[in-house]
Image 1 (spheres, one colour):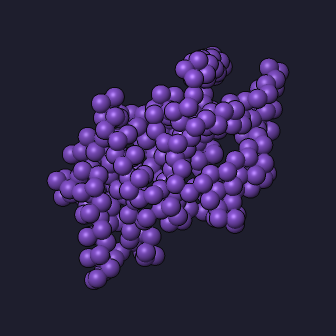
Image 2: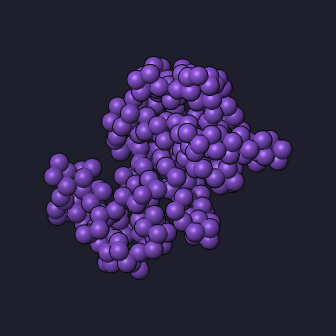
Image 3: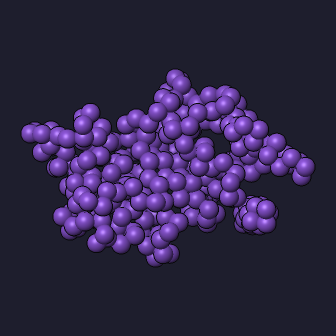
Length: 259
């Protein structure tokens, strides 16, 4: 489904990502881990189409991926992308309206269909009892469920999650894990999820990608970018290797914090 060929990303003289190549089949769930600033979110933005490779290409079904977001790709960020002046139900409906109308409004049968679709999704994510409330009445976990419903109403083939659970308490995060896994199976999504939590990354999905630099120059720290240093099938990794990856991420974060 997705083919990444010799992809690089540079900002000026700084190399963020270098020479990444990978293939992803439809229905896979890829979790991305790595130290802060290693390019995970940049990679996600290039999949979304809000950023483009400096070199190389990303193909979707054998064709260059669209260089702007479309209905094939839904995204959920850590910061909840909800409209505070709209009810929970209207927040989901408006996502459909923006996709189907130049002006963000639906009328008649199209509006009724969008409302019915939104109500069904809210029931799936466990928010039907809150559909007439406003976002300020929701907990953090509920707002994240709302953001997921917003993304799913467009029926994307690819769902991009950028640290969606980082701000949630552990108990709520566990509930969100189960929700995302259930939605992944139910809607047959292809998912890419960025996380700083190695255990979370290894618990979810089918493959774990570790982003890190293969080359380092202390005199020119921005001369080289990160690549995929590990591509691991979830559940088939020795504990010693996970410990090695965790220590490497921690050490890199410590260096970044000291700069």
